[in-house]
Length: 182
Image (cartoon, rainbow, N blue to C red):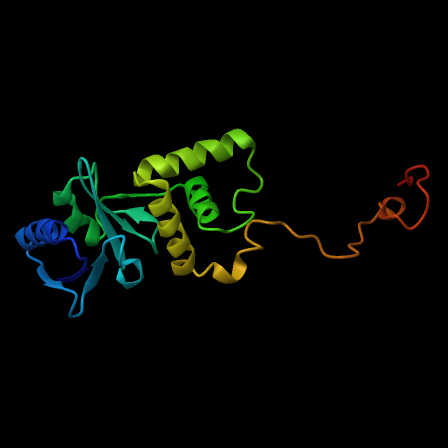
């Protein structure tokens, strides 16, 4: 297996190199073919986004909405890259991330407490300052292919002039009378 690392942070590269090399991976810096790992400054180039935390290293795969490391332990990254381990975002968290990325209506249908709950969980899971989290969320929207649906995601739309049998009096065509008898 080959990993290509896109970063300017040499300490991050050294840590990724050490962990992946010990697991039998070949690692290159900004050139070659393989699994692309990018830091937060190089999001467009990465299949997996990696950043340092006070407790270690966190890796996130945007296409699968999945974290690849457990408890920020860098030693769990090789297993996560192979599809073993890690954890996915819940559907509510995915909607909250889309909302942070600019998708209007992503949180529609949730009450205020649910919205706050999912937004707080996203902030805790990613552990990033607000500007970096919003940049990551905007790029997540691009990766997911939602930029064309920014105004329409999660909005139920009724067909115009929808005919509902037995509801003719409620369509606004005539003054409201007694309900129809079935």
